[in-house]
Image (cartoon, rainbow, N blue to C red; front, side, top):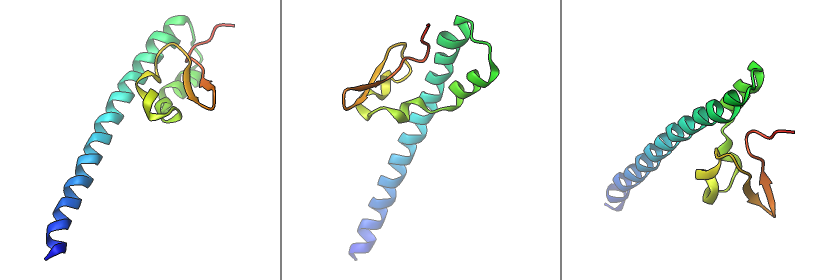
Amino acid sequence: MRKTIYFPLFIFVLFSFSSISAQEAVDFARLRDKMVERQIISRGIRDAGVIKAMQDVPRHLFVPLTHRNSSHNDCPVPIGEGQTISQPFWET
């Protein structure tokens, strides 16, 4: 009897988290596309390899959950231990 109750609950939780993750992935892909357009291409970067790498690398996965919404902003983002991931475009 217990298995009958817990299994549907398990399935509900599993699908709830997977749909959140899918939506999150779409949102981060959109943010990444905007970042590349506004911060990379618009500043004169034309190298196809650099542009493709910036479009393909899931930058948000390299920062803690608490800072993921900032991972595509034009500023350094804390990654822990007093370190940061640099902003996407850095002029020398």
